View (tube, rainbow, N blue to C red):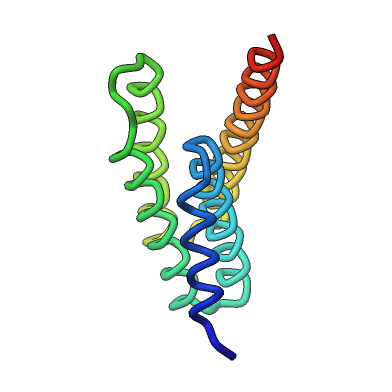
Length: 131
């Protein structure tokens, strides 16, 4: 199978996404990796567990690095991302399932908040365009 067409499709899709859509994509991947870490921890596949936690940490670091610091909420999000990193490092070292579940739940709730904000923003833009 020729993967060049698929790769080109992926690149075009990413280039045409809004910032909100890209943010949701990152959160989707974060939640997916956290859930994978939980599964691998339960299976006692510690190498895969650590890889999933490491990838989650990379995503959180990226989210923090790309915050637009002009907005006051960025400081709150940055503190939350620091908390995620702290907890995920604890989860990784201690293989702490309870803390992993807590961080996963928080990331999932944050993703849902951003998803709702994106919907509201899109609906608002549509209404403005109609006026």
